Length: 553
Image (cartoon, rainbow, N blue to C red; front, top):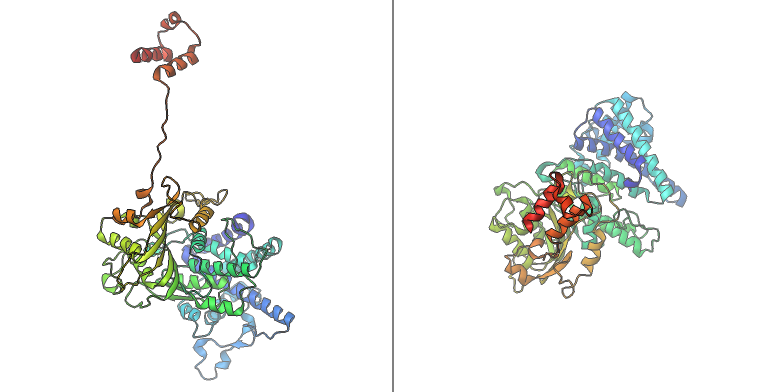
């Protein structure tokens, strides 16, 4: 959506530049501080809207900004009421009118602590916000940021009215765009998965309402959001929504649906689970989902590869892009992980297999070397496990530019369904055929700029052909996609690289005889000159052509 709205994109760029020039140059710190401000603005807007809706319908409504609020540190003191703050003064629409120094002091000392405490002392959000700090250093920067965020919301409102797109979807797009501006890879090989790749994977995995969904390395919550929007869109279609339009990548997506009843929303929120080992990412992930309408997201600070993480066989769907680089301390690896390696890219795939229930499906992004690496036996053991204990449905290779500007690594999407538990004796390998697809384009340029191209690249072709795949029909290995039987994969030592099975077609090209080419070149230089005239030429290209003609006879 932002591809088509230069005004909104420009406002967001202005916001970034203000933080940069205001002394907050670390992109991750800047995005966290911007997020807190966006959250304050959204809270006020949403409260006003719900209040207006309640007045219209005659329902009762209690505003979050009604009455007084006592900061947590004063609640156990004698006479805590003396420290009470009028909640109305904590509204964005109230404090934005204050003078610069007063505003900074008020937001730092009252509004931000209120935000952290908003969902109650026991909530997951409050727990993870406990160590969050508001570090905008200058009153002038806060005033400028508040003004720019107001302008961004005005453009969003105008866009919503003129183009008929749900305000919540536009707000989500704005936040996703902000997240995409974190242009440097983080610790442990973290980098953001492009939204169109997440949408592609959700379309392939097809999560359903009521299914338990997880991402064991969730970052900012992109895959959980992708699953949420996929389910909400499905509910909207079933409810008869007529105004849903395909986005710039050819996918139909919304965060708003008449079919999303209170009961359905409660089921959906209770079945989305994310984990990450970076506390900043956990906070960003929580707020990302809340910005899109998930009021109580379940994202937790946990290392899912460690001994402290004991969950197993409890998810219907796992979607993930786990870290590719780095290794874990051998002494801290969960004993249930049996590969005997410290490489996180291998451990995460085994862990995802263990997290799935029988019949559960995973969509996982892996580095392409994992598909064919034979430098250590552990790679082969993992691939054999995927073939024998899972129904490995698809291997979709992606071009190396997909993750630019973060990294130029070549990757692939693995889609597999768990058939045998880790403790089961395999009586029959679960995989019969594997569908291979060579993605050559994803609808964006494959350089650092990642500019949107005409069309959707291979995205929609992948979806259509995956769901229509056939072991009988998809046998042409010179094509962009084809099926390979398990026996062929076993014969190749469980190699899963597409190039191992793809057959290249060499086109035979016929060239003219050298003498014919020389005669044509001579004619182009001197026309229809006779032999005597040609013999008289002592220098230049014609003389060299004549010498060549004499040499080849």
